[in-house]
Length: 255
Image (cartoon, rainbow, N blue to C red; front, side):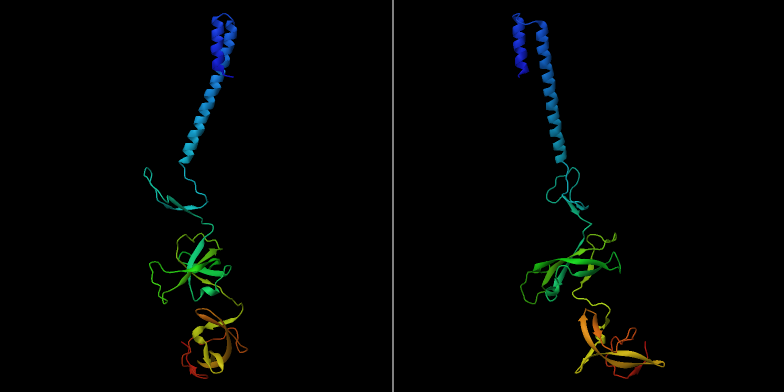
């Protein structure tokens, strides 16, 4: 009901002597109570609006993380990217792999990573993404077939290390294939002839060493090592890492 209208009617009836002063007072009280309730409700709505406006002045990131860049200043006008928030719990190594090696890289492969901040510690990761298209170095626009072509690869870091920071440089190796409990020698130590592969072992003879030719089968290779196998190989055997022109049975002094 419209309490203001009721009060107006009551005043009119009271002036005609149709209602008593007590009846008029009751209508007045009802009007005053309704007016107070309306005022409180309006004030509440105003407060809600003000709270919403205040919340609108606060920037909230959609993810949890650490603020790594601030592009705004207090009292200034800014646009575009104001803050950069990065997730330090799920670090990703971004690397480029040449077109000659990318055919062997697939998601899920183990990666061994080292960084300047973590020294010689080997950090384990997993390949999480292999780009479907090649990317050229920044600023390169030539389409010459001799241009270096690379593919972007992302590796998700599995090991947690407080010294590992966002933006640090890193170097890593992706394990394409692996063998356990095998012999391996430097690539330069493996020689070949018409009969196959061989290495030279350094066999001690009094105060000198004698080169002994040993036939082996070669296996997996890395940039520096090659897997070898053979029935003449023994654990702890001394191998000539770079035999050069060494001949079978030749003696020499170990340096």
